[in-house]
Length: 138
View 1 (cartoon, one colour):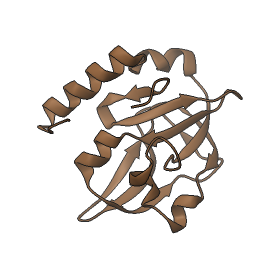
View 2 (spheres, helix red, strand yellow):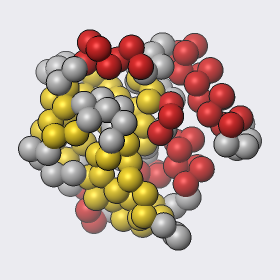
View 3 (cartoon, one colour):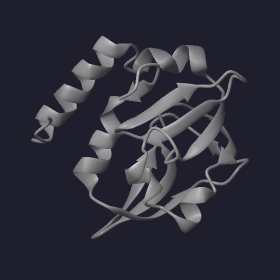
View 4 (cartoon, helix red, strand yellow):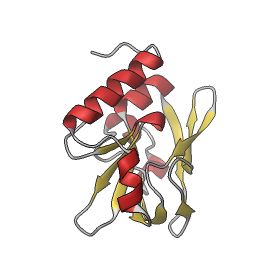
């Protein structure tokens, strides 16, 4: 995972604080590896209010539809419209063009304490999650 991203380890989503105070949200490469290929991605629409650990959208996988959990609470201010026609971007560029939504966070100071922040903390949380889920990591 690139430096500067915050990790919601339990559900393998990440958050990136943007210069305007909004937070960009996506799914980790490890989470995608565990889930399989995404065939459809439907984030909540702009104006939707989400809570930390609750659904920020759904993805359709080969054999299931799964709710993607938000790393932070807030209001969706922007949706990655490119995913509508090309959901494979989630896999191809999970930390770039494959982001899901941008939020106006509503409880950032309180909730970021529940995230893994910093290279060491993120690496440990990813390794622990991979171990718990019996996923080999390179």
